[in-house]
Length: 224
Image 1 (tube, rainbow, N blue to C red):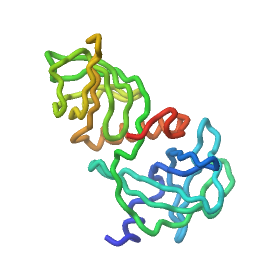
Image 2: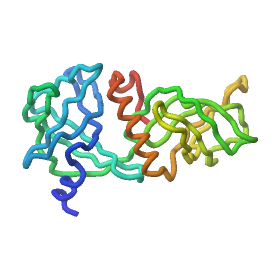
Image 3: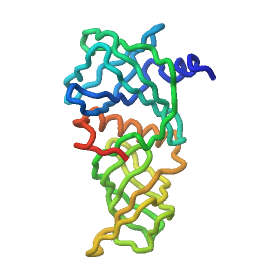
Image 4: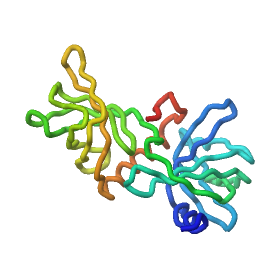
């Protein structure tokens, strides 16, 4: 598939993207937004907002766009430049059309602090706990004390994201932390075999977290 065909396929009107940029103080930030249109040699983006205030961009500013498109823990990534800013109820960023599209790991997406209750199995019966932070590819959870949980173990997490029905996720443990007082077992997990429906729920949830959070890297969320 040529780059032109791939660009037309990936960066379509209405698509959600994660936008990364460097602000005037040299701080790397990212936020979620949508593609308004692909107009010939231009890519038009909705200007993202933080606290309902549009983020300020300048002409010629370079932006990095990432779009999750599959379940392979990868995203499409490209760089564009701001050419013009169209004022309106929702300001629009008129950018250069992408020339090259690459792929990057979903682990480049940031983790966000949350507190989502969960149930999990298998364990010595069924356990409970809560998710402390979450990304599109995994999460960190604090569980009931369970010394049987080891790196590489498979777990099933049952969680409810606000506004959604209860659902399950298949997870593989990548790290364990046992508290000295034996009150909790901390586990970092990666999600596996995520269905299209659940993937969409996770994407929407992360997207909304990025829209409603102060999105400076290293403050309210951290890179994986």
